[in-house]
Structures are given as C-alpha cells and as structure tokens.
Image (cartoon, rainbow, N blue to C red; front, side):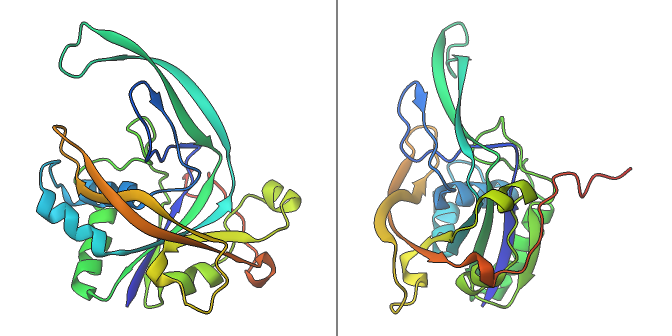
Length: 234
C-alpha cells in the first residue's frame, strides 16, 4: 500500500457536488470527484476520456478537516459557453481559510508512482474546485507506505496557530466507507454523489459513493503550524 498526502490550503476553495443552474454551492469538505478531476488534469486527460477517468474511482480516498473555514458567497456575472453575447447572474459559494489533509492510496505501486509524478508535473493547471481557485504551491506533502487512515490519525495538525488556540476539540476524518475499520465508532455514514462516470460537457454523470466519518483526538497529534508563506523565497 502506498499513500500520497496532500494539503489543500488556498484562501478559497469550492467543492460543489449538488449545484444547479445559477446557484453554485460548496460542500464543507473536498469531494472524491473533485480529487479525480484534479488527477485527470494532472495526467492530461480530456473530459470525454471516460474509461481512463472511471479507473481513478478505484483509488482510496480520505481526508481530515484540520481547519474549518467560513462559507462565503461571490456574486458574479457570467457568459454562456456557447453564446458569449448572453450573460447571466450567478451566486457562487466558497470555503474561506479552510485547511484539509487529503490522503489517496492504492496497492498498485506503479499507478501511485505515476500519480506522484503527474501531481508534481501536471499537464494542466490544478485547482481547488474551480478555475478561479488555483491550488496552493505547497500542496504535495509526501508519499509513504502507510494506509490513508493511519496517516490521517498520526500526521501533525496543519491548522494555523490562531485556530489551534481557539479550537481545542476533535478532528473529523471523512473517507471511503470501506477504509474504516468495523470496530471504529462512526460519527455518521451517508451516500455522496461524487463517483465519476463522465466529465463530458455534453452530460456530466455521477453516481453515489458511500462515505463515513470518524473523529480523532487532537492531543494525539504532534504540534505543527501551517504557514502559507513558508515556501515563498526571498
């Protein structure tokens, strides 16, 4: 088993799985479909390469909410894709100042090596849910040989110091349900519409995926701070 750890920590993020028409909502944590879209962009897949994209559903996916952000709304004027003269009004929702630790894993070592290379050398620009939100420069943390859940239970807390000082509680882990041990106390389990069948512009198709949540004690994690400027060179 190999696992890749990623940090999603841009000032804004958006993870909509249930948006319609002119109101574009965001979920409160990243979706597997968005992660698959990110991997497809890194590999250079086209939107209609359904077979290759569907294979990415097999990758194990889990994440930890290290800093809960606020939901904010942006009011925009947009143009229709096929008729640039027609404009319409849209409300688009984002998460502000959120930080997520994302773990993706597989027993296919060759695939994980290809994913690592693609993420470090992406064919297309990577985004955190929308094209207006480029991914943070320090998003790639490491690749190791521990499972996704084990990583999320032990990796240092990535929140900013001001957040840690005011939020002394548990951290939530959301994951593919089959990754959670049956002896764990689930906080909840539900079906989430983020299993990708097609990203085609003609018809985007998603099926349900079973997702579960567990909570872990913050005190068990090593102390570390997230510094958005740490990779900025003088």
